[in-house]
Length: 132
Image (cartoon, rainbow, N blue to C red; front, side, top):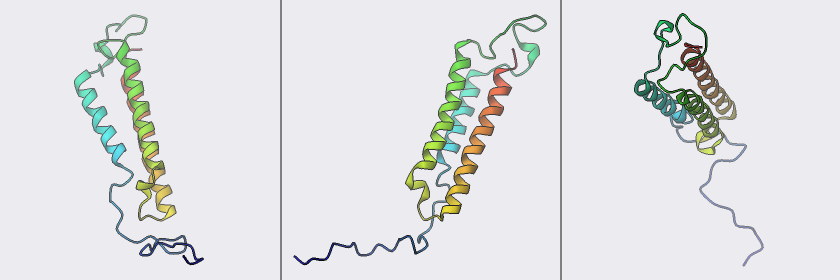
């Protein structure tokens, strides 16, 4: 045994050398797209009320659900929060950073989280406030 430490060979990525290889085009955006598809399918299945004139409390007072069951209001909010959490977790995974520069990682992460947050807020306001 010699006194020198083992150094892996063939690894070219260091902090001084820019990343090599081709990054995945949609790396870091899979949860964003997948979650959007799940939410779209959920809205197609649940068919919420989108016109205030169709609400059960139209012309009166009180709150009503945009869905057939009031419990689905909470389930929809939890689905949106889960989507936002999945997007944020995906951005924290090193696999989303592969072969990218730190500035690109930060911009892509910010874009994905802001898109998910904006879409979640817009959907929640549009769907959940219609009959309130």
